[in-house]
Structure formats: C-alpha cells, structure tokens
Image (cartoon, rainbow, N blue to C red):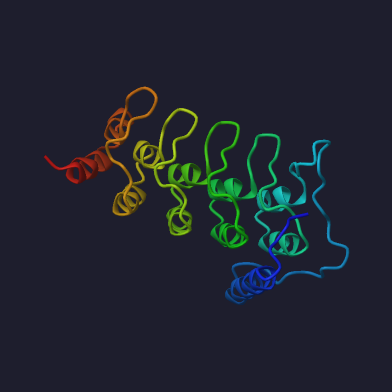
Length: 207
C-alpha cells in the first residue's frame, strides 16, 4: 500500500474524483463501477509491487478502473516484467485521461523500463502531443536520456513528429545534445529522412 502524508490524501482523492467525473461527463470514460471488494496489486517476495491490477487496467485503457485502484491504495509506480509502469504504458498507447490520473497521483515521471525509456520518450516517439504536454507541465525532465542516450527530442525528430519537436524546443529541449553514438536531434531527422523536421531543427539552431 502507498504511504501518503495525512493532509495530502483527501486533496488527492478529491482531485482524482473530480477529474474522473469530468471525464465521465464528457464521455471520455465510463462512470466508475462499484468500489466494493476492489482487486489489489500484490507485492513480490522483496516487498515491491510488481505488475498487478493497476498495470493491467492501464494496458486495457480502463480509466475508471485505474481511478478506483488508485483510490484503494494500489501502488502508482507498479511495473510489469518489462519494467513498464502504468504511466509508461499509457504514454505509449496515448491515453491522456489515464496519464493525467497517474500524474495527479504523483507517478514518478523519470522511471524507465527495461529498454531504458521513460514515459516522455514513448509519448514523444509515438506522437502523443497531449501527453507530452502533460508530462512537461508536470516537470518531467525534458532532456532525460534513454538507454541509448537519446532524448525525447531526438525520438520525436526521428519519427517525424514536427508538432512535438516544436513543443519540446519551445520548452527548452537541448537541440545540441548528443546520444551515445554522437548524433543530435538534427542527425536523427536526417538519418530517418524526416525532411520537414530537419528544416524545423535547422531554423531553431540558427546560423
């Protein structure tokens, strides 16, 4: 079970319920079902919560279940065998409603899976601008390196995600940073023949 500071818990629960209610009203998610006898994530022999129901709910894009599990104490940073936390899962799939719930519950924005990627890497490379925005606004480290030294800007450049590249540059991403092979974001765009992004990066870099 998670440990909360006593005065924070009511505020977090109230904020999460308000977010779920707004999402349900807009039709983004279904109203939460009954909270009787909710399932719980179970710790492994070392006491660390490993996968479990919260990871499964995130993978199923079930925002109501995620909210219910968080309310009943499931560990927000539980990870599956691949090291992916619920936040990493939805950053990759593009479910911004669940991403916001997890961020509101103070999910660790810097955790990386076994491939070395954090949530921002997945959101940027997969083209989910709304999640990139939510993560950056929540103070995810914009120039965090993955297992190969690549940043979110590099991954977005290589995938041709021009709007995300523009957003990251506008929020201070380091255009001159190199990965472990010495490639910067411009080189990533060039190597993947992303001409539009290459032009954008050249303009941002200046003379």
